[in-house]
Length: 99
Image (tube, rainbow, N blue to C red; front, side, top):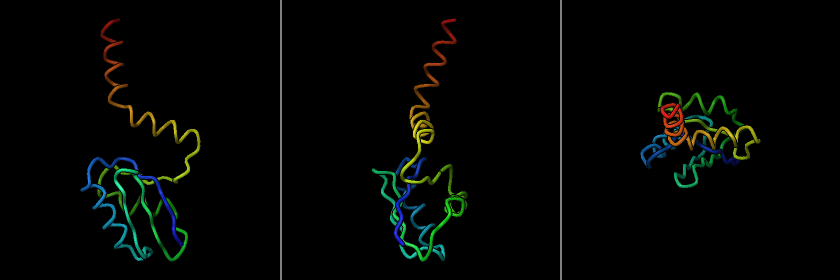
C-alpha cells in the first residue's frame, strides 16, 4: 500500500535523510522516500499505518510532525501559522514595544 504524508519541521536535507532512514528501518515499511522540497513522505507499507505510529517512530529525531497529505482547514491554518512564526513573533514585539 502506497501512502503520501506531509512532514513539518524539516529544515535541511539531513533532516529528510534522518526521517527517511528511520521510517525505512521499521518493520511496517517496504520503502520510504522523503522529499525536502515538497516536505512529503512517500511510504510503501504492508498495511495501513496510523499517524501516531509514524510520529512515534520519529519522535526521538527532533520536532518533526507527520500529517495527512490532505489537511482540513484547521490543519492548513496551523501549518500556515507555524511557517510564519518568526514574522509573527517580530510583529508582536513591535506592537508591544510601540504601546
